[in-house]
Amino acid sequence: MTLNNRRKFLEVTGKALLAAPFVSGLTSCSIINSSSQSGKIGLPDRRQYNIRLSVKDFGAKGDGTVKDTLAFQQTIDRCSVLGGGEVYVPSGSYLIGAIELRSNTTLNLDKGATLLGSGDFNDYPVHQVRWEGKWIPGYTALIYAMDASNIAIIGAGQIKGSHSVGGRPSAKDPLRRPALIEPINCQNVHFENFSTDYHLMWSIHPTYCENIFIKGLTIRSAGGNGDGIDIDSCRNVRIDNCDIATGDDCISLKSGRGMEGYTLLRTTENVHISNCTFADSIFACIGIGSETSGGIRDVKIENCRFTYAKTHAIYIKSRPGRGAFIENIKVDNIEVSGMEGGFLRFNILGSGLQDQVPVPGQDGIPTIKDFHFSNVKVTDVPVLVEGTSIHPDKPLDGFSLRNVNGTCKKGIFLANIRNADIDNIQVSGYDGSLLNGVNVSGRGLKDIAPVEPPKTPAPIKELEPFKLK
Image (cartoon, rainbow, N blue to C red; front, side, top):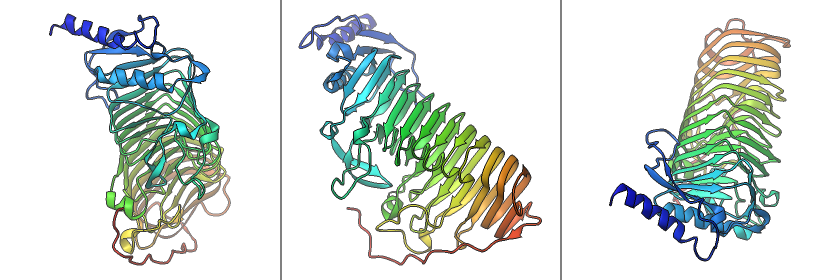
């Protein structure tokens, strides 16, 4: 088939579905001539010629009242079966239930386009989803994808979830509530430029995904459990130039909980967060853990501003019973102000819910190593570093804090750390000693003041052999 004939075929078949049952103009269906994006993390691997379909031509009203779910899904499905391309959403307010992205499709939101999530739980299918590190039955997200590749949401529009569907599972309603955007087991995921609004539930939750590119998002949420971006057992993640103000962690990195997560061993790794602004009204700006049973490693955070948190700017957390590891965390060139807790905290002794089937014995104590922080400016933080909640049986191996300046009310508190390197800490306004610790070895520890060792939890006993259900 010649190139001209192939182009004509796609034009005709792309428009054929529009003739019935919908009667509308056909000019918005066209061919996009785009060069290949293969090899670039997170960008759809488009073929040379793709189609562009408008949801309006498939019956979407965009009046904020009539549900446009079917029109959106038909547009996405038609685009996918024709080889992929762009699903265009013109200006308007579109009331939708859950829609599923397909491989090789890009949802492009016009600047004046707003997607409004339905408040009816019946509009959200039930599947296996991740909740606090465990796979359980739950409602899919407003926009979700499963086992797809080369998917994207781009454009300057808005995605607003219904505040009535957020919240936590309960005994009366054990299903997990809908996230706002949730790709599961997907590759090459690209989110760029749009804004979100949600309440009492996670906004963006990639799970078991590889090659994620998130750029230029404005994320707003309110209330507990209102995380901004939760990276859950994902690899090769880039988050850049986002403005995130949330009712819970702005960004959370996690990888599963208890023996289930430890057995599956789906690690979150190779995560790069840069040029972002964070504010959090309930917990931390960036939380690493506490669901760490699949391991977390190779995380880089740089050139970011932390403007408010109820607890700490950066909180690394886990507990015995998780097992696995947290390693190679690097933070550089950040500004921290407005913290009610402090700049940095480690809590590897008791953060988060204990799992019903924890990892027992010494294997259940997470291995932690190589946490490095440099070029940090702090303004009136209550505590510079609270790093005493570390298990003496598995000390933190490798910790550096270099080139820190600003003001704080209390200094640095450390316990059970080997190979520490403390250098050029130029802060003022603190009470007591700048450096305090117990069972800490390394460089830059002159005049360290003693502190009480942390209390350690009772060992977790061996349980009956675990079987995945």
